[in-house]
Length: 151
Image 1 (tube, rainbow, N blue to C red):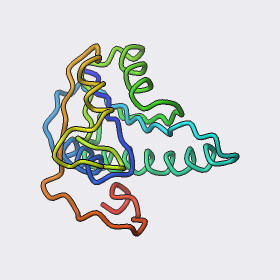
Image 2 (image 1 turned 180 degrees about the vertical axis):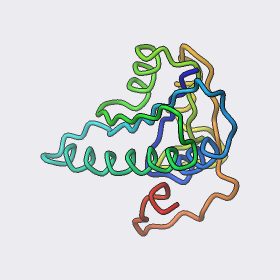
Image 3 (image 1 turned 90 degrees about the horizontal axis):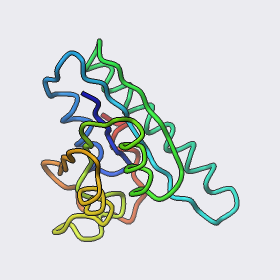
Image 4 (image 1 turned 90 degrees about the vertical axis):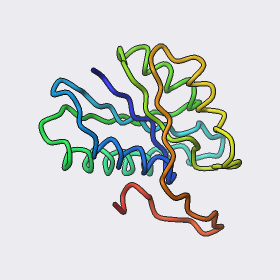
C-alpha cells in the first residue's frame, strides 16, 4: 500500500503526522510526505517558501521514521496549486490512500472542509482520509512555529 500524506504548516497537518505515526500499518506500506508551496509572484518568495516547506517535510519524515522504523518513508516538496499537485502526485505515484488535514494553513472556516480538501476528495484516483486535530488551537495573529517540527 502506498500512502500520500499531504501536509502544510497547520495544526491539521500535525494531527495527520501524529495519527499516522501511531497507527498500525501493514509491513509493505510505503509513505510519501508531500508539501506543496503555492507559486507566488513576489520575487524571491517562492524560494523562501520552498526552503521552509523542505524543513517542514524533513521534520515530518523524521518523526514518522522514529515511530515507524522499518517502513519506507520519503518526502517531496513541490511548488504549484495544492489541489493539482496532490492529485498529480497521487496519479503518478500509484497512490492507494491520500491522508490530509481538514483545513490548510488558512483554516478560514473551521465548520466546513477547505477548498483543497473538497477538490481532492472529489477528484482523487484513490481513497482519501481527512483528519482533524483533537483540539483546534485558537486562531492567533502571531506567527507560530511549525506544529510538526515541535512534536
